[in-house]
Length: 126
Image (tube, rainbow, N blue to C red):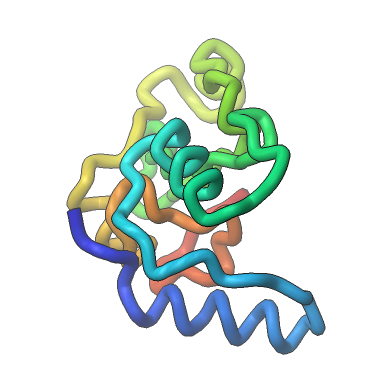
């Protein structure tokens, strides 16, 4: 598992600084593939009150029948995506992006996708 692409990381940092957002970097740390892994990294890093619900997960989806239409679903890390609702809105062939598609659109590996589509090298809707 590789770290997020430097382009995405740099764009995200620049966006936060430009917006005057205060943030703390947690790292370097081992890559996190799952939300559960991310909780453990935060706990080991000394963050208090960390729960699965306190985090968010970002999931890249491919809209049905539209090769270049990417959707970013961001939800609490302890929740599951409602495919019934997603497919009712975007078409029944809407699916999760493959690992290669995630890398291509976001510049990241699955598990390292930030919840801000504007930081991606490719285009995605939130």
